[in-house]
Length: 165
Image 1 (tube, one colour):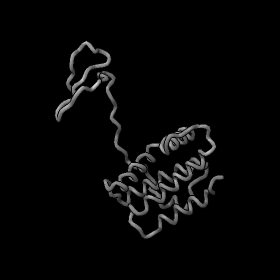
Image 2 (cartoon, rainbow, N blue to C red):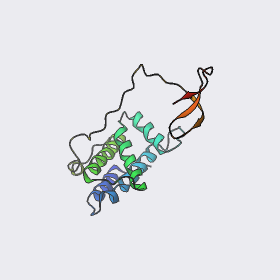
Image 3 (cartoon, helix red, strand yellow):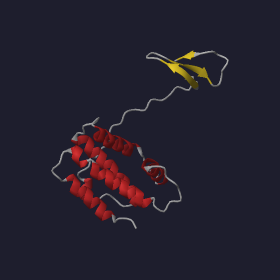
Image 4 (tube, rainbow, N blue to C red):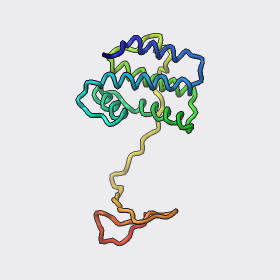
């Protein structure tokens, strides 16, 4: 049985208004998202290896962009490891990503009181670098390495002795 959408957004509302720093508020939306995704995919006949595959499968099924959720989840990991210190503006965009995803997954609109708290615009993301179609690639069996190079042989052309990358 899935949790009622009103309780989900109620928990998000309460978390948003707690007097905590952004890094202390981050775990709650992550737990809510995880709980929702697991509940919604519980009856799927797919053997998910981890939460990420479960989330991406649900996003794909619902035709929802997973990138904002990936950014949110990477920030959660950064907070846990101490590699990232969140700022309030980023928290607002991450909360928006979670709320939009939950709304899509449950096919319900975001409540007005929460929607008013969220940024109206989309978060800016870094442009993904496109690889040139002429870029040459080689698969390499590594035999040794040092601080400057990796040495190995090509699997497609093993006749060439040692390649230095």
